[in-house]
Structure formats: C-alpha cells, structure tokens
Length: 454
Ligand code: FCB
Image (tube, rainbow, N blue to C red; front, side, top):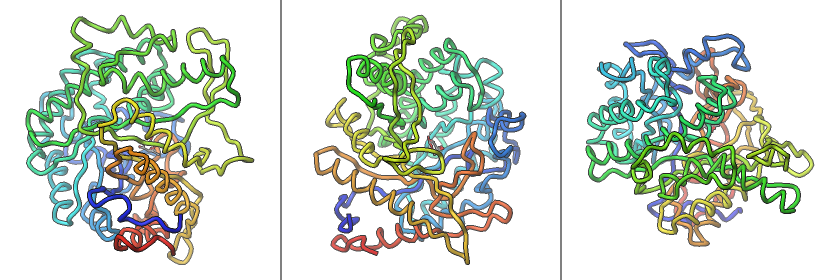
C-alpha cells in the first residue's frame, strides 16, 4: 500500500470531503429557518447519547467561507454538503425563505471562488417538522412537496452547481427513523416504514426529473449505504438469512429505481409495500442515473432466526479478535468496500460509481495543537487501496469523499464519536487539522508518480 498515488486513480477522479446540514450548520432557528424533525427530536428528552443538539454544531452557517478555504488548503477538489429543506421552505411547501436560499447561494460561490466543486445533496435527513405533522414520508403527498422543494433549489443554484445527489442513504433514515425509532422522527411502525420507503423511491425519480428540467447538463445521482451481510457459516439457512437482510437493508432502496421492482420474494415482511403501489408507479420509479453514490462503513453479521418473513437477526458485531473496532463499535473491514462497489456494479456495468462517504471515528486526543490519529490514516489508506482494486477490476469508480471534513454532530451519538479530518473544539469552535488531514494534503499534492509513503 505504500505505493498508492493520487495519479493511479485517474486524472478525472474527484477527491472530496462530505458533511451534512444538520450535522454542521447550527443556526437552527436563524434568519427564518423552520424547525426540522431533528430539531424536535434533539430538543425532546433522552434520545441523544450526550444530550446534545445540533443547535450550534460546527457553526458552519457562519463559518462556511473559512471551512471551504480549508477544503482547498487540504487539496480536495470538491465539498459535498446538503441543503436544509426547512431553511429554504420553513413550512416545507409554499413560502420560500429568501435568507435561507441566500445562504446556500453564498456557499456555492465560496466553493467556486476557492476552486472547490460544490456537490449538493438535496435531502440528508432533516425533513421540515411542518411536513412531519402532515404525515411526513409516510404521506404520499410528499412526492409533490419534494418536487416543489427541488425545483426551488435547482432554479437558484442550477447555474453554478453541476453535481447533485437526490438523497442521502434512504436505508438509514427509513430503517432507523421509521422502523427502529432511534433517529428522528422516532417512529416505530412497519406499515409507515414501508409506505415511507415507497414514497422516497418515488421522490428519487421526481427529484432527478426536477433537476434535469432546470439543469440540462446536471450530473444526477443519489447515495446508498451498502452494508454487505455476512454469516458465520454458509448453510442454506444462512444464505436465506443473508438474502432477507440484503433485501431489507439494500435492495428495496436501490432496485425499484433501476426498474427491477421490489424484492419481496426474499423477505415476506416486505410484502406490505405492495398495497402502497398505484397503477403506473413501476414506470414512475425508474431513474436513469448519471452515477450512484456508494457509502460504506462496515459489513453486518446476520444470524439465521425463525422470524416469519425475515429469517434472520441482523446485528453490528464487534469481533475484537478478528477486526479492529472503531469508536462507533464498527468493525474495520476494508475489503467490504470492494464488495459494496462490486455489488452495485453488478446491476449495470456502465453505471459510474462514486464513493460519496467513507470514514471512521476514533478516540482522538488533541495534544499540543496536534491530533495523532494514525489509525484514521491507516483506515483511509486501506480503503483507498480497495477503490484502486475495484478500478483495476474494471469497476468505474470516479471519485471518493471522506466522511468527514470535520468532527460534527453524529445523530443519536451526539458529539461523542469524531469522524473529522479536522478536530473541532466545540466550546471555542477552534479547528485543528488532524494528522490524517495532513496526510491527505501530502497525498493529494503529490504528482502522479509520487507515492504516499510518509
Ligand atoms: C452515514 C451518514 C452520515 C454520518 C456517517 C458516519 O451513515 O450518512 O451522516 O453520520 O454515517
């Protein structure tokens, strides 16, 4: 791995960092912003590990120019950020909040002035609370609301933003937010989860069309977290368990938009989704993506179990003997990234892929103005080697985005896990680039023939 070099990935490869509105912006009620489901969720009691909120977070709302300059300083080509729907449309539909839209206009200009490509995600989990009150993703009317929102954003930013992602990880906000109830809006209902899943899949298509209608040369994709299931053994019941979890956690969010329908045969529990389908939906779901964003953190261990319609229990294993474990309790398995890319590639060999998130939290310590996070650097090097292996095997991977530029609000885990290339002192908002950030800076500055040896 010592011989990994930037140039090996190709001249057109995009190197970026990613973050998301609720996790970094703060300014939760500034300048006319409406509340999102995450504001409500964090302001309620006992749902966040350290009882924190995203009210201030990294204060990106006021520091975006400084943070964008840092992206440039580290040598990245692109910054992936998301738009907060209730900042733009405080009630979710209808009245536009001009100051909210101005903020994103400014961030785009700051990127362009710094020579950084803006990569915009339209939805990274912060639904307007007003729409949740009207049923949120479980109400089919959301398809119209979402189309209206995307049109407003595309009209304003489309002259300068070319690269778009419609959603961030539907699997996460639907399974964790509507079925497990651990993320906002804290719903626990199989029926609502299935309805919401179908409506989000319809919104993928509506969002992509709204972008293309305004921006003819847009590069339109969406992102999926891919969590390859594994079992300890390979008996028929293990295979059945893997297939069921794969359908539940991966396939239902990807396949309908590729024209493949819902994989209900793999998990009977999914059959309830059929009652939400209306005539014409199969066609309405189809999207001709320019690229798909693959996000990878870990594999998951699956255990066969006599659960009707699921045949399995999924869990995030912590096998300390075989794997390094991150501060999230996740196993480090770099070859799972290759598996994730190969899995998506198998759907369509011509579809361009971008790793839109990959990264790790470790227990960092700021000492004497430095964070010696060699474990994070090793993590990135090992995962980048898997991206190269995928490319070498003919999988068209066009870019890689680190999660994340800076430590931020990690959802139900609050500020405890730190994922950044940059350390943040949340009391002072002081930014300190970690050793891993400096490693990237050297790696990205090196010429095509130089190596990453440090
Ligand atoms: C992903 C999310 C992102 C961040 C990372 C650690 O699933 O998209 O917002 O929380 O995990």
